[in-house]
Image (cartoon, rainbow, N blue to C red):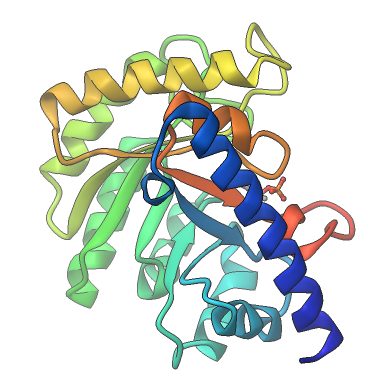
Length: 239
Ligand SMILES: *Cc1c(COP(=O)(O)O)cnc(C)c1O
């Protein structure tokens, strides 16, 4: 094994251990939580090692970085998640490789995604990104729709050809009433998810928790955690 593959294997084992402990502490089955490895800023060679180590779900946040990486890994069976803020002019590219777009936060984006998915004959999974700190009618600093805008967007996705509503995603807010209170933030997301599932029972994915707070997300009930740093290392610069 190369040094890098061994390093990734050791990090993955640690993250696996954290998820397993968090599941045990919450009385949840390990299979209820899916690990998505966020490979942004890291090369396709790392994605390849991760695949050899058993990872099947990866996420990216910038199309410029993700598109060539997904192309370089097209021979691998991987589910690609797009988790970054998405401009409508990038939608066509993103839909060509992303199985799930986790950052759906406005109707204009729903329309663009539906058009692009239809053109490709694909079905793109969609998560509504919730900005827990956004005021009614506004969007979050890091993307996302305010909680009271979720149902309208969900209905738009549900009726859009080529798209499938899968659930909700959030990033714990850095500011506002939930700052530093990840568990409370993820509990709030679960309440919003319960309400959503009332109208859309199949939309049962809850994507929450990153390297620093995956335990809080698992405790609250997340079905998917998105882990970058703890598996691949600290990213140089912003990512
Ligand atoms: C980068 C990123 C992650 C992973 O964050 P880490 O702290 O590196 O684990 C998760 N979700 C989103 C939306 C991200 O952009």
